[in-house]
Length: 432
Image 1 (spheres, rainbow, N blue to C red):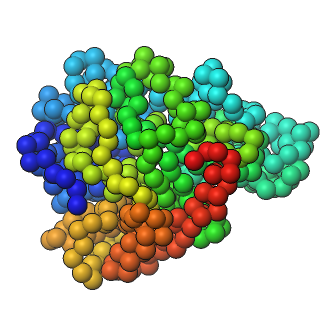
Image 2 (cartoon, rainbow, N blue to C red; image 1 turned 135 degrees about the vertical axis):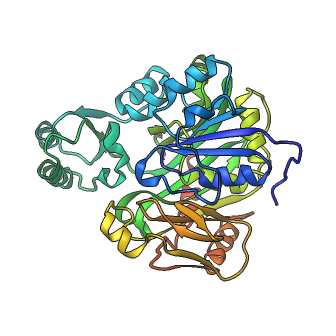
Image 3 (cartoon, one colour; image 1 turned 120 degrees about the vertical axis):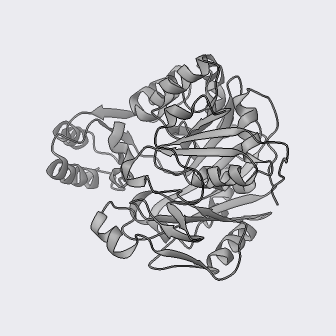
């Protein structure tokens, strides 16, 4: 069970882009914090109704709040301004926003900090990119930059050594997007284990333990189907990691200069030849933050308060592994308003038995104590499990799913399976 601090009753204002932190807001409120939540995206405004108090203009509640939490990139300048005014803020900085949003900047910063990166070329149109692949045949990954990178299904990982599959996809994007796609990168593809190292930063230094996450991005088991933002993740906490030391740790002085306070993650491909950072997530990861919460044994409100105050403390976490899987409904991972309204809007989440742990509300509202699906993308729940072994954590998670009915829902049945093979490779390469 989570340890609750009965003496902690801070006023917390949560500024959310898409409502992804409803679970965190709900948890802090249950711990005794006074909470107000604002959601920016128009299609997500209903999320959280009935769970937590909602506000329509967050700016009017700044003076009320002891702590303000921003859950997405793009708020960096506002976070800096509020910190300069003496407010306690968990959120980005102008620098960390750029690390994530501008892929080119992120890669250049890695180089500047003497971190090895994979070769990439940035393009502004498809013709130049197609010509490049034809002249330099190889396996590539197509990575949208800027706002287009929000559409995760556009990221394409090529498998053909001549790059012919990438050429076909680029031609398809050219037909459907024309000149509205924005900048994108072609990055050389390498084989290995995809893994991310992440940690919380208190404005001066990283807190320990650090977090190691394995993401499962494809829609179907065994990595089949389209890329989604995420279908689930497995993770563990550790005091030390060669992957962290080779990447994020080197950015510590720069992050301190910008007074960054929040969570930062770097996704990497690793193999016997080295560690290759791919991209930054300089905010909470989704569903990463909820799975982390399943492993953190201290009260979340107090945790974020201490972080925002710049305290140096050891994060209290469970031993072993944590896993989480999204239960989604149509039209996920696509945006299709008609399908959503037909199959999913206001569908009820039914619990066969009373469950307190491991069930994290996502795009939901509460009406007459019933949990109803809302928003516009069809992410209903995140279900988590923890255990001393990966198998224990998986069993705990999938057992919980058996106690829940969500009409038309689907989810991955293999979250965590990769660990058995991946861990062998990581041990042999000296990276665990």
